[in-house]
Length: 535
Image (cartoon, rainbow, N blue to C red; front, side, top):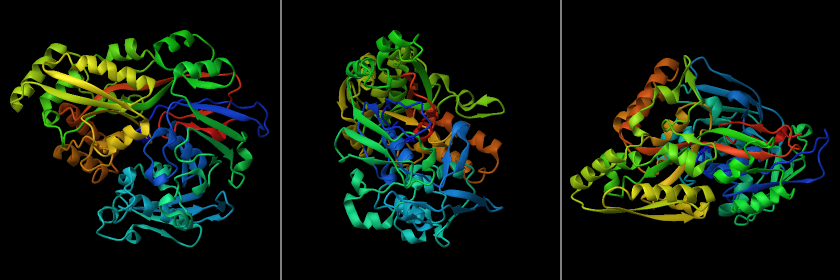
C-alpha cells in the first residue's frame, strides 16, 4: 500500500507517477492541475484497497481517526483527541464535528461500520488482518460470530471506542489507514453491490472528492471538498488525473508544459535529467520481490529451486544497468532506512546475505538438485506482472536470468494492472512480480504479510517457526520493544533462509518537478503524497 501500502497495498501496488502542479498564491487555485498515472485507479472502496494509486486517492479524499505525517508522527484527524487505557487494550476517540461531502454528519457509527465492513468475511478484504487484534476479530473473520461482536462501539455520536484482545504498539498507525476510515451504512445500503464502484457512488470526508471516475475509465478528478472540516487549509481547488503507460508520451507532455511533474521511467530518461534542478529521487519504504506459488506448483514447493531462482538474479546489474532509475538492491524483504533500534537499521540486522546474493554457479547446482529431488528433468514457469514499462523491463531480465538454470523455460505474462492483480489475488500464477510499500514505519508492516493465512501471502508460504515468532512479537512481547524487535529479526531470517520470497530491489522513484510545485508532502511509507499541503 500499503500495499501499502503498501506495491501494491501496502498491497499489491503499482508504481505511482504523479504530475503535480500548484499555484504560488495563498488563495485556492482556479486552475486544473494535471497528473499522470502509469496505471488505473482500481477502487474507491476503503475496505477493498489493494494498490498504491487507490491508496493515495483514498488518503486524499477521506480521513481517518488520526493522520500520519512526516517521520511517522500521527496527528488528529476526525478524532480531535484520544486516550489509551493503562493495560493498552482500550482506545477511546473523541470525534470532532465533521461532515461527508453531501453535508451529512460523520459520526462514530460510521467508524463502527467501516471497521465491521473491513472485518466482515463477505467483504473479502485483503487488509482484514489489520484488525486481527480487535476483540473477536478472528471469530468474526471466520464467520463464527456476527460482525456486531467486533470490539468496536459508538458511545453516542462523537465517541468511538475500540477494544483489543492484547496491546498493539502500532495501533495508532492502523487507524491512519483507509480500511479503518468511516463508511456510511446508508450509502452502502443505497448502492448495494455497486457501492464505491464509481465516484458518484461513494461519499468523501477528506480534503478532496473524486469526480468523473466510472470504474473503468482512465481519467478522473480530485475536486476540493467544501464540506471538509479543515477546508480553509486546502489551497488547490482541482487535480486532474489521466493514465499514460507510454513514458515517451508522458515526457513529451511534460516538456510541452502539459504536466508539472512526472516520474521518470528507465535509465535513459534518468540519465538525461539527473543533473537537472527539476530532478528529485524519492526513496520509498518499498520492496519489489517475487512471490512463488507454493501451494499449486510442485517445483516451487522445493526450497532448493526457490533458492536457485534468487541466486540467479544479479541485483546490482538489475538496478544499475537494467533499471538505472536509482533503485537499489534489496537487503531483504523489509525495506532499509525505515526502522531502527539502538542505532541499527532493521534491514542490516536481519540480513541473510546469501538470500539476496548473485551466484549463478551455485544457482545451477541447487536447481539441478531440486529437479532431482522431485524426479524431474526439466520445468517450465510463467512469470506474471503488470504491463507498465518498468515491469516489462524487469520481467524480461528475469526471464533471461532464470533460463540460464538447467532445464528451465520461462514465459512472460504482462497484463493490465487490474487483471494482473486479480490473477495474483486468486493464486493464478507460478511466479508473480509484486511490491509492497510499508503502510507505516514498522517492520511488522512487511512481516505480517508472510504469516500463514494473510490475505497478501499470495504465494502461500507457511512456516510454523515464522508464525510463532511473529505471534510473540504481536502478543506476549508487544509492549517490550527490545524483545519484539528480536522476534521480528529472527522471523525475517527464517523467511530468507527458507526463501519464502525473492527480494529484488528497493524502490527509488525518480521524479521531475516544475518550479511551480510548492508544499507537496511526501512520506516514504503509507499513502506517500499528501495533496492538502500544496500551496
